[in-house]
Image (cartoon, rainbow, N blue to C red; front, side, top):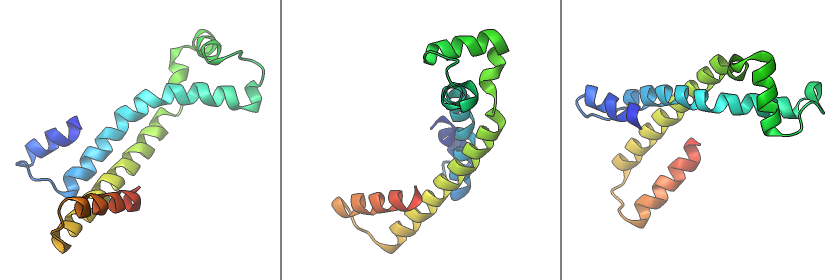
Length: 125
């Protein structure tokens, strides 16, 4: 990601668990900014409180914006930013540590390395 590249540049191109943690945390914020409006519309369509109020997704989006303003689409943004930052930071830093340890433990190449990466991905996620 952009954040990871920039953090590497600032850290003399050394990838560390700290760089992975910071990159993950920073990547969680734009992810939340993009996803939150969709979440707001989805929750409105699914909640009992608003049952039957909206005909479809675009109707919900238009009514929310018209009645409550565009700012209503950011409800829960701060919480989502924190959740994504914590999750992404923990995920990327733990993946970095596991891959580092795996590389120290074995020198497998090719299919073995791909299988190791797959197992690490399952463990991390």
